[in-house]
Length: 417
Length: 217
Image 1 (tube, rainbow over the protein chains, first blue to last red):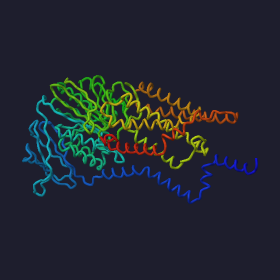
Image 2 (cartoon, rainbow over the protein chains, first blue to last red):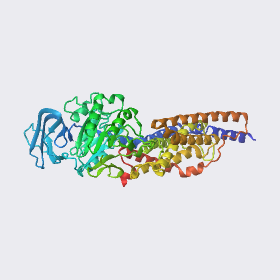
Image 3 (spheres, each protein chain N blue to C red):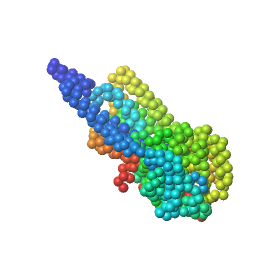
Image 4 (cartoon, each protein chain N blue to C red):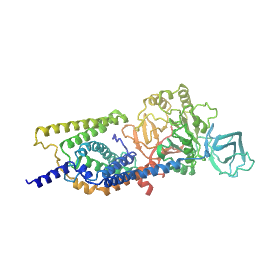
């Protein structure tokens, strides 16, 4: 082999072994720098849509004022009482005009100057639609705000009605939140005549953060002025002392328990304070209350228990043995129709010992995967959703899992017990 | 039915976007790491590519499982197809590309053995063992299985190196077949850009509760 051919062969070998480095060395420094800058620009541009999305969602999340549309809650007998709540940026007195026609006519007031207003109405007529308007009469001028309405519960247990349930409406980091979408579905059902909403907890992402609550109420305004919102506390709401949760949801005595119950037509609802499913959640006072309450309601055709942390689920939190050990005997003993929970951010319907357990954690927070691994599972999905219950005391209760655009993707039927 | 799928559909698009973006970055920074029918230009790239390829294989198998569980075995309730099928079919496309890229384009004996071992371990773990545990968190064990297979793969690389030193006629590291040219015709740069854009769109829409189909239909 002549020396020239040998050099050429060596050069090719080197090029093959060190091709990338050799190529870089051959190039001029300016060319290399240009390539690196171009590559960096191209690489960063891949993330640009995400930055724009996060920026847009973050700005959409900001609520500059604490002013909030009204929201409602039963505070005693749903047939005759209602508490109307709202928040104003500046402290004022609280003034409500209400009546059975849009012309209103009946005043209710609270003279103390506050930011979060709760006006308690009592002596209402059962199964009656009331119209109302909120504001203050500090200036003596007539109120000019929007007029909303609600309907009180029937006094008897034989009136058909519809109620809704949602859970985990919390936002997530980076503006990830689909509650605005779910709220549209709830609003549609509110307009169609649904009577109240059960909330399975985790109303806000950070129970101690005012912005989290502002963001929730900003979108809840689509349904909260018309549908009483009966909440169970979730682990995200449950900050020490629950200052904002108690502030917004009208617990009259401040230190009042977070478990309670009410009857609405043929349905008995028991709301429990189980935010984490830990041993500490199952206080003697709550369990005694639950047993006594269910025992007293044994004649009710439909008994619904709602709390945050599921006993059984094929989602992230899986089977919670503490909840299972504490709740299973109670649910069995008192023949509970239905258990509604959240916590796991997916949808699931399970049947355990003849009792249906719903996980409806798709109300707004980041959706999680679910695993169809349990023999008790009857249906499972990871998508935004809420629950609708059509109660006909004579026929039974029909449950529907609903997507925000109104599609029903799972149903179940519960005969009266 | 007791099927199991780790991901479901909610994480397909966000994690798919991350991996597809890393692939795009690799395309940008290393556009010519090798010719379709040749060895790698740089032995360093050849050495380190095993780790991202293992990761891609890991997710690729899961993504195919998502498609099979959701679309073929009907793991989801009817009526949710608008929300779940876009992710499921993206999972199929990504799974095929990633598994092909990692293990099927030009595998040698050790790559093929590791891949078969992982697929068998995945099926046995998630379809037989996990339903018996009733514990969704035991899915994390599949990561340990993957790590063990990677360690075995590295040991095979060492054995291969020793074999090459002992016998110059050793051919165990040669590809069993090479369909890289055909693979590049299908999953070329424009296709990767389109897939990346679809995954990105689906991920951003899913953060707000939509999917590619629900937003248009």
